[in-house]
Image (cartoon, rainbow, N blue to C red; front, side, top):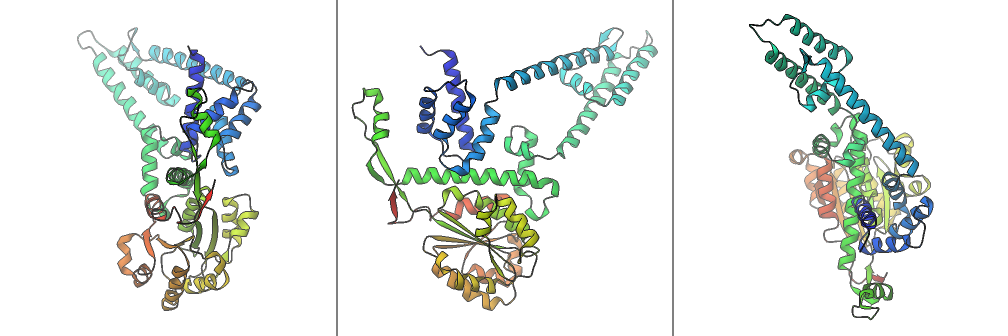
Length: 453
């Protein structure tokens, strides 16, 4: 019989694997079994060895190490930290109990506590000191003024409950305006869910400065989840290859090692290449940076990501991205020092330079993604360059931040829309729909380019 402690440990490991999957890491049953087997050879009390064993079995890409380390530190805290947290939680419970006892004494009428619910008592303990004193004084004055022929206790309880409901509403409204980077990732409460819904449906350009951290956290989470789904879909649909001896042995351990079940390697189809072309003119910079952040999160599911920015000129940003520590540093460098940021818009000149100087990046494996509101000088010169780009790449996607109801106002939208697939991206919800539903719908697998895993 398996000990209860071992069952709880296995359940915790399964929960940790689920958390990794939810944050974009491709962790399945096989990886979890490998992790449990690796842990059987080490002292799990050794935190460094424990973490190393999990990293070596659950993480397949160095880009995922940062996410793994962050989640590991949240889920597996050192014993001394756990003990400290338990002591802190016990101290807070004792303090709360003392506050409730004090509140019951202050909100008593002729020696008997008022008929208030535990939630109402907690609201009272969280009120500012001035408001608590005001309610306490009101109770004492009412107690002193009561006459035998006119009991005031029911009226007193009604007034106190009304005041507590009022202050609860005030505090809830005040907390609703707090920054929600952490709450957007958790999504556990109704308030967090409502905040995420608002962020998803609001126009990106209209988001306030205080909303940007939560919006970026939401973008990162959505892109990691989409990348994980793309990788899982690739694995399910990949054709069968040679016999996988390791998986065959593992699958037949229940049969005493006799090979009843044969497992085969999967052929890995060649991945797509993404080529991002972002309009970084003054009215477009926030939209383009959000789309780029979303696409950057898909890099684990593609073989190559090339990044260009344009306004009146074209700027190749991929070398800078490789030199920088990450995407945020690149965006900051482009915002502050980029040649294109904040200038006018000349789509034709940018596409002409792309077609002329970067032809080696335009192949039948490339999906080109243009982010622009289509407004440009010299529209007639831009159209043939867009057709030339479409002939060279596998697929051409145009993400337009203009709301769809405004598209009929601009002749350029209709003109470019006849050449490229055009989808709205003015909100995070529409951006996710466009990329998840259209970008890889018919482009996940390239016929005739499979290679062995």
